[in-house]
Every structure is written in structure tokens, then in C-alpha cells.
Amino acid sequence: MRYHHLVLLALTASLLQASADHRDGSISKRQEALSADLTMNNDWGGRFDAKFSFPLKVDVLGYLANITFSKPVSKLDISGGQVYSHSTDNLHWVVVNTPDRPAFHAGTTLDLQFYGNYEGGSPGPTGHATLINEGIDTFKPEAAPNTENSKYNYNDVLYKSILFYEAQRSGKLPANKRIPWRGDSALNDKGDKGEDLTGGWYDAGDHVKFNFPMAYTTTVLAWSYLLYPDAYEAAGQKDYILDCIKWPLDYLLKCHTGPEELYVQVGDAGPDHSYWGSPETMTMARPAYKITASKPGTDVTMETAAAMAAGSLAFKDKDPAYSATLLEHAKQLWDFGIKYQVKYSDSVQAAAGFYRSNNITDEVCWGSLWLHKATNDDKYLAEAEKQFDPDPAWGQSWDEKTIGNQLLLYLATKKDNYKTSILNSFEGWFPGGKVPYTPKGLPFRLEWGSLRYASNMAMAALVAADAGLRPAEYRRWAMCIIHYALGDTGFSYLIGFGSKYPHSPHHRSSSCPNPPAPCGSYVMSMKEPNVHTLYGALVGGPGQQDDYKDERTNYVNNEVACDYNAGFTGAVAALKHLYLTKQHPEQTSNAQCPYR
View 1 (cartoon, helix red, strand yellow):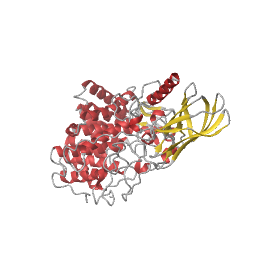
View 2 (cartoon, helix red, strand yellow):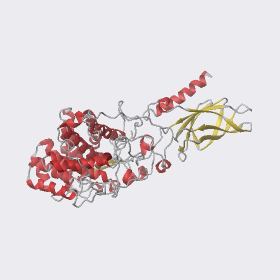
View 3 (cartoon, rainbow, N blue to C red):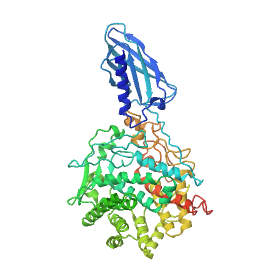
View 4 (tube, rainbow, N blue to C red):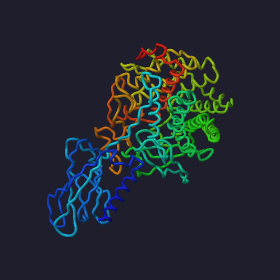
């Protein structure tokens, strides 16, 4: 029996090791396993009908059952379950739920019913089973201290927002990873010639790596660090924000495989979006798409150049060699982007249905401005001024950088025409302008990701205020937007922050049970909350009447995305900075919300 015991230990250990990147590896820390003895219903001599019954005190979303029989069982036909593995002597079996039956509710009994074939003649075997609930995650980071005693804990928001980006990581994860339920994934992402394209971020609730919004997000996060290093330092997040932006920068460097060659996407959104599961277990093909001299793309090239230029500034002191590498790539990409004037979605049809740019002039201006900031070379500023759009900004996003360009041009030149454009942009966004407001005071540009646009403009307003443009008005307006997101309506749209927040975001990996319990489309449509709390993710936000449904199928209001958190994180860093410099609206008796 010692041999059989060792086989079971080895089998269980292999299961835990296989999922060690997703959880802490300790069953006892997740919950106590339930135990049951076999109930024999019928014994026909060589074949039997039996079950294990587990009364449930908590909901189970995915399970693993370790079964030990008293004599070898050569076959199991299980109702509502499937064999995951068994020992060579057929005494020990591991069973998991089927993808179409992942949920079992507290107050009911989970009956593991099966037919089996056994050896050695009657009577049939006795058996014992332990059931592990794979739908439990005990990861709960402690809140960061609120050192300013502000209404909302900006330290904790910055901490959790950066954690969200760690949950989005693709590739080989570091040994010091902080999200226990995430593991290595997409380790075979390669280019046409076998180039290593591992790393980067998964875009949203899916597993495609769309470089256009990824590069934009990286640029904005780097910008926020360059503007407000004191905020990140005081919040204890300086090293983490630099590590956060380095992760996509390392990937984007891999994607730039030649002076006029840039990979811009990994993964086909069609098959990817048909798969509801964790990235660690996906098996679909992941093609890589690139732009070249014959099939160029100015918008994504300039956005990537901007990310690398901003990154070079962020790492200039900490890692001069890395900074220089980023800047060299940024210059090459700018040359590539300026040489061929075409949208990348015209060259990469796989991106056209998801991240198609409306035009390229804002990206040319944006990329040129970041190259100018990184080099002080006036040729880049001249190109930016040539591409300048004076019209009021529709709303900062991965697709439009109008307000960002207006701000950077004004900061670089102090010219009145850029100042006027900034003021006109915010006139359209303030109450009485062209952007409508929800009844509870959120400027509402678009239902799909409403908080994304509002938060991005909040960051822009805080940058404008720091430049001396209507500081009291812009700071209060921006603060009210961020505070709306954090809980002013009685609900926080930032997952894991506050007492009431979303529990069922449209996000595959956080919704799936711990492996080896399977995931699938049934999980997507279930009402149960996600297994894992996706700390720090900003969901899309409310509808125009402040309406919102916390449902996994609600991808319009309840999906998350890397770009959703970008300007939001920058705005929070700006508000933290204002507290440090004693200019925050709460410190100047100017904190009434909503802004009317």
C-alpha cells in the first residue's frame, strides 16, 4: 500500500504543481476539502453503480475530486463529471466537473454519480473521496494606508490599479508576481520568422494583444509618472509603476523587428473571442500580424514611437542604457511612420473590426511631440505643429489624442493658440457644453466605456490646471469625475475598492475556476460572481441615466480594458500630487460634487 500511497501523493502533487501559478498551492488555505464515502447502488459483479454525496455549505464553481478505491477500477462513466487522471494501478482517480456543469449551490448536495468497472470479482470496491472547491480564491491584498486622510484613499487606488495591469500580463511571469491565480501563458507567441513575441498585456477581457491601445496605455501611464513622480513615490508605488510600464515596453521592443517592420497584433480576435477560458489553458492558434514598407501603418507606428519615447524619459535616471535603447527604437519608428501615411487597419484587416483609427494626424502629432520631449530636436516639434488640430477634443482615447496634443504643444511653446484650443475643448465638456451629463453628474460621451472617456479628460484637465489654466474649476471638475468612479453615487466602479463594487466583470481569466477544473461558455453566462476579484480594474461604467448592471454578459458597461485604467490612473496620481502640495480641492474648500 505504500507504493499506492506514493502514487496518490505524486498525482496530487502534480495537479497542484500544474496550477501553482494560479493559486498558492495549499488546499487548506483555500478551504477544507469535503469528504464522502462511496454509496453502492448496484453491484453486478465486475460493474457497479455508485455515488459520492457532498452536502454543500458554500457555492461551488468548479471542483476537483480525489477518489481512492479499495480495489482497482478500470473505467469510470461519470454523470456531470469527467476523469482528469488516474494512477497506473487504477486505485486512485481524479475527477473534475464538466464545462457545462460548473456551478453547485450552497444548501444542495453535490452527487458524484457514476458507473464503474472493477477487477478481482465480487464484492465491488469501497471508496473514499475528497472534494476541493476550485471556485474559491482567498487572495485579498491589504489596503494601502490613507496617509492624507482624503475622502478616497488615493494610495490604495494607485496600488490596485497597478495590480490590475499585472493581472493582464501575458508571457513568462516573474518569480515575484503578485497575482497568485495568474500563471505563464502564450509562451509560443512568435512572428513569421520565429521572432519571440511573448510578453505584453492582454487587451481587455479577452486574450488578444492589440498593440495600438497597448502602446497608448503605456504612453499615458509613463506620462503620469513623468508628471507626478512625487505621488507614486509617496504612495509607495514608484518601483511598481516603472515595472508596470516596462512590461509592455519590453514586448513592444520585441515587436520592432526591423527599421520598417513592426508586429502590431498577436492573436485572432475571432477564435479568441469564441473561447471563454483562462489564457493559461488556451490552445487556439495565435497568428501575429505586422506592418512593413509594403503594408505600413502610421497610426500604430507613431503610437509605439510615443510609448518608447515616453518610456525613455521615465527610465532615463534609473536605467540609462534601457532608456537609450527605447529612444533609438522610437526614432526609427518615427521615421517609418512619417515615411508612409496610411492607417494600419488598412494593412492589417484582423485589427480593422476592433481598433481602427479614425485618422492618423493626431498620432503623427502625438508621436512627434513625445520625440521632441525626449530629444529636444525641433524637427519633431515642427512636424507636431504642422499636424495640430485646433478643434475641440471629442475625448481622449486610444483613437484620439487631440486634447493630449493641445496640452503638450502648449507646455512646449506657451503659444496662445494652443491655450485657446484647450479652453475650447473643456468648454465643450463642461456643463452647458456639447457633452451631456448623467443625472448624478458624470459627463457622458459614449455608453461603451463611459468612465474611460470621462477619466481621460479628467487627467487632461488636471494637467491643464497645473499649467495655470483655470486651476480651481478644472481641479474640482476632474476630482468629481474620479470621485464618481470611486463611490460618490454609493457604488465604486473600481473592482475591489470600497464596500460596493462590481463582482462579475466581462473578463475571462478572473471568471474561471482554478485549474484543473474546466472553464467555458457556461461560466460566461452564469449569474455567479467571478471566482477571482480583479482588483483595480475600472469597468466601462454606467449608462446615460446612471444605470448599470453587474453582469458578465454586459460587455458594454462591465468589461475592463488596459486603456480604461490609463487616464484614470494618471488622474488619481494628479489628485494625490495635489494633496502633497496642499492644492487639492478638499484642502481649498472647493470640493462640492457633482460639478454643476
